Length: 493
Image (cartoon, rainbow, N blue to C red; front, top):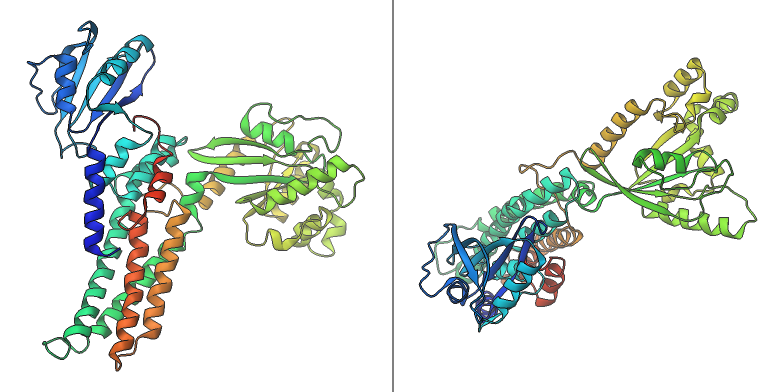
């Protein structure tokens, strides 16, 4: 799709979207509170007159206390605030208004039923208000997805990251890269078409290749983030593994401060994967309690649990390796001959875990049951290994453990997000940026200054790189992609 076609396509979409006026319950605060009903489209003024009266002349962005009437029966429905936002200075870019009514189901139903009787109005589909804002140029696709993440944010860190993205932190960065690639492509096109006829500097291609190399460095640094933004958005998938009866289920219950897993003295109580999400200082953690791992067992159900546990390890973002502190100290003399640093490798072999499955994953050792150790043994344990110590039974050492665990999460998620360093929050951003670098590298490798046909062919690689950036922001996309994005929104947004 070329530039002109894209403009026509987008204008056509705006006309199609604006052909009808939509309304929906935007937000509600319970039947004792306030609900907001939004209307957007060319018939907005008609809706205001039908609900409030023909004589009503709305003042833009000014709250008026008015009675609301049913457009057909003329019966009063409620009395509340009404606000009018003329386009393009509105969320959608169209004429819009809000009715703030009492939050009872009867009032809301009567208002929605009344709006449905007005010619030209229809209920909004999920995400349609935001979709119109996108088509109207009020938001790009990264801001739209940031708004969706803000709606679904469950922790403080998620909220901050989503808010930054919805207000344009990523959009500004990607738009800067897009403009620079456009400039490079334009200079190259000018060199190809007019180098012999016009006064164009001979080193123009040399300069643009330097600029493209700088872009590669910047985009590569942006990609080299250990997926921190995605981990914060989706939650850190944390799997708890260890030998049977080392206290994995007790540890999960302690972290979440409620009884989630069954705890008994019998080894192998947990058979299936038990998942729960918890908020640690604003960082979301998805815990997975797994079956105890060991080399040999004749129990068919336990074998299935072990298989599931190993599969869970492969998809984890963080591995918590629990072991019995007392058992470790009993084995310390034997381990000392090989070096205590080999403990992890030996322990994983006992659990029948292949090192290649966890080599690239962050892992933290946790010594449980320290209430069974003497002070000297505890000091020796903490000094021997980079390990967190705790007693799940009596919550011994809980406060320093939680402080250290919070630090671990911050290092994995990169701390709280900032506008100066926006993060990649979606896998599709990462994929398109990687492809963008690939296309630029192809151009740099194929560039041959002495043969114009080769330059013309190579120039297409720059256009491909540009499209990769535009696919992130929504400048070059398809309706199918948009449908997937906006399907995550709730009705009224």
